[in-house]
Image (tube, rainbow over all chains, first blue to last red):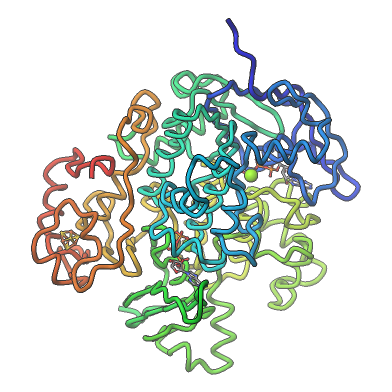
Length: 270
Length: 344
Ligand SMILES: Nc1ncnc2c1ncn2[C@@H]1O[C@H](COP(=O)(O)OP(=O)(O)OP(=O)(O)O)[C@@H](O)[C@H]1O
Ligand SMILES: Nc1ncnc2c1ncn2[C@@H]1O[C@H](COP(=O)(O)OP(=O)(O)OP(=O)(O)O)[C@@H](O)[C@H]1O
Ligand code: SF4
Ligand SMILES: [Mg+2]
Ligand SMILES: [Mg+2]
């Protein structure tokens, strides 16, 4: 029996208008996530990773699109053709959610963060009161003193605390697919480990599929079943994680692995 | 020895925010008594707990925050007493790269206008040569071809491209010191290597110093002359070789939490236990603030706060009652000896 993909992207093109020019931010990408799978997306800065995530979740404010084409389906539904209302429902109720690379740009500066998490909660009253659920989420992403943090505004938090609030918001809707764009860059190593543990636990317990965009190959090695390597708007390699680390096919992939390895103490190298 | 370029003397920063329910204020002691000398031309890394006050420290050094108590000095003069001429010198010589690149770039200006304005104000190049000057600096941070980035607005750049514009902006002024808060976090390792090399080159040619705040311990090990480790508003360890020989249990915990690059030995996937929790208790009264998480705590740790004091001949300082013992542990075996954070 072969399962059908949760997310199926075929020949996706996202070309953006830039004055008289066009930037081919995504230029023919195939990408697939099975239910309950965890995939990593690595690659050059500027290779189109965030653009792809935004196109898939259809959250593209502020862009001037020259071309958007290809097939994008989530659970067999065509996302590109979906009306906004249906899409919003998909984001809120057990569909997909997104952790953005730039939390400050997506958090509401005038609203306390606890309230923002509460608004994202899935409607599942069996899980206790909203306040308790907010506090549990904050605790799970490693924020000490949840009651206190919930009352603060985004600007009253450190960079890593904001990043964790963003993660809590994304998890609040209990998604089937979590798209995470550099979710742990602002976290110290011990908090990062704790957050990755939480993501992994939810991934297993709730069969939550994950796509993690990261520059940190350690995150990929720890969590991901499969990896896509991107360069200049294209996927240049995709493979199971162990295979990519042990037998990279492309020079660029090899270079990423080698440079990452060189910086680690011997006991942590592959 | 030469005078430090920047110095923090007993600095504290308390943030106040309005209480959500009812009147009154909430206080956050973000920086809680820090003394620090930053020497001319050195690269000082600041690592540590998320929320421990690193960005706040950067803002204090940049004169963006005024300390609640204590003072910040620039070349021996207290920042609160800087005459306006010295203030101009300070603004030029001390440059910043902020943690959120997107919010530190003016959204309504193209890269060329934003940077061109600085070039003109500081007469770094003639108007005719400005474009070429900027192109050179963008190429140096790996933005190729540079011309195609000059015409963009910040939102038309990827996260890592914004970060590199911020780095180029700080570097082109040839400052005496650059205070960079997470400058590498959105860069792939290949561009990171290029930026780290650029920092070394710039240091060689202009003796610029850096204060780099980062969670990337590998990158900091490769570039730092000294590293300070922060925990809950304080420096708990500072020295040249903390990566090979940590003296403070928190430093060890951090180093041991680094991820391996071997997918066959994934810690997280092989883990069955519930996730470890960071400590959410209120700061301990009197005792060591790391005690609730410390695998080495003894009786005295509950009652006496350890002071930051020298622990070896190399000038390392650590704030732990058992620092010498812990440093000796690591020296004897290369194997991690601390229980992993998953077990603590
Ligand atoms: N609104 C926009 N208009 C025009 N070009 C854009 C826009 N947003 C991004 N780009 C360009 O599209 C390309 C892909 O950007 P994207 O943000 O997807 O990269 P990324 O892989 O996420 O990079 P990073 O790792 O640096 O975050 C980049 O070259 C970028 O400059
Ligand atoms: N404007 C503010 N008002 C109130 N509290 C603040 C403010 N800015 C920071 N804080 C608090 O001060 C503490 C230190 O914050 P800071 O941003 O300096 O941490 P950091 O070490 O840079 O953390 P990170 O690594 O997560 O960026 C945190 O508890 C934060 O919530
Ligand atoms: S002083 Fe005691 S509690 Fe604090 S870090 Fe050292 S051993 Fe641990
Ligand atoms: Mg990105
Ligand atoms: Mg910070």
